Amino acid sequence: MANRSNRPSALNAPSAAAPSPEVDISGTGASSKVTARLPSGESVEVLLYGATVISWKSDGGKVENLWVSDAAKLDGTKAVRGGIPVVFPVFGPPPKDHATSALPQHGFARTSRWEFLGKSSSEDALDASSVKLDFGLYSSNLSDEAKKAWPYDFGLVYSVTLSKEGLQTVVNVRNEGTKVFEFQLLLHTYLRVKDISKTTVTGLAGVPYVDKVLDATTHTQSSPTLSITGEVDRVYASIPQDTTTVLEDGKPRFDVVRDNVDDTVVWNPWKEKAAALSDFEPKDGFQQLLCVEVGSVQGWQKLEAGDGFEGGQLIKSLL
Ligand code: TA6
Image (tube, rainbow, N blue to C red; front, side):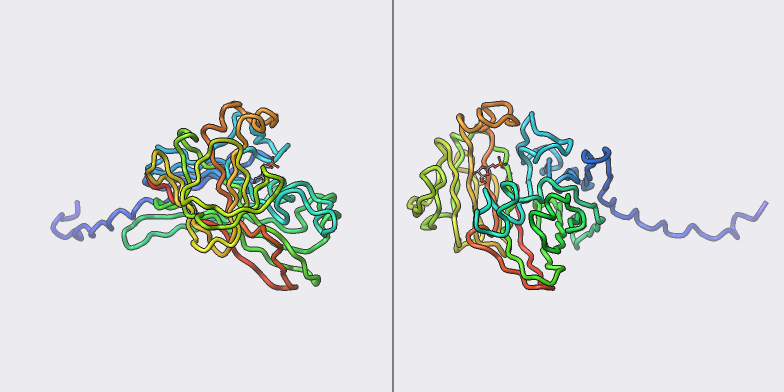
């Protein structure tokens, strides 16, 4: 038996590497989704259909920050009612005299099957890990109908980055063709709130907005705080400061930080519009949601052949 004294001393066991984020793919077909979870418990779920974020849990995974209708279709038959639908290449009903005129409201990105391109995770000096999920949508992925309706070669890469600080979602748009095209882009975020009657929004003071509840007339946000006491559907344009804050009972709950996009839509359907939406359940769910949607929707971004554009948001949970 080997003389124990001659045995090599135990090597210093390497310190256990910090646990890394977990990423897995579940479901099949249009219901496929990618779930990422940090060692500290935060998580994000992204449906390949529309690359729609359908869940973002912060604070160790204890707090769900997004609202998704109980009647939301998660099987690829309809845009998801909730979470963060991606709106491209047009916001709202397309203009009649425009290249997007044959597209459905809010374009085709939220109703197309995206590819999962992969993940990358990182640890910063504090070992606070983050994980980035990339999704791709290319003109070749589109239905024949969508290709015919908008015959431009493009590539979208959508990056969803989960960290303890928040959720960052950024779209990179590339013109892969030979023809210039123009587009609008918006992230249609349904934030979950406890009680809309105790929810306010700041960061929009003095900003002009188009009020779609008042026949798309233009107004200016006079008060520093926006309260929601009925249907709200406002497109705030060219906002000077990059952060819109949602407060509950006067305490900051979310910071929505725009990244290279100038506009923010604030929407709550309220009772009547919620009742009219077949996939909106429960019908009083409008009391637990506020859409704060960053984008570039006033006018059009023009993209020359071979050029690219990148824009998106960082949402911080401030609990
Ligand atoms: O972002 C606000 C808005 O444009 C509203 O006018 C309302 O139409 C909402 O989007 C939802 O649109 P959707 O096509 O998802 O029913």
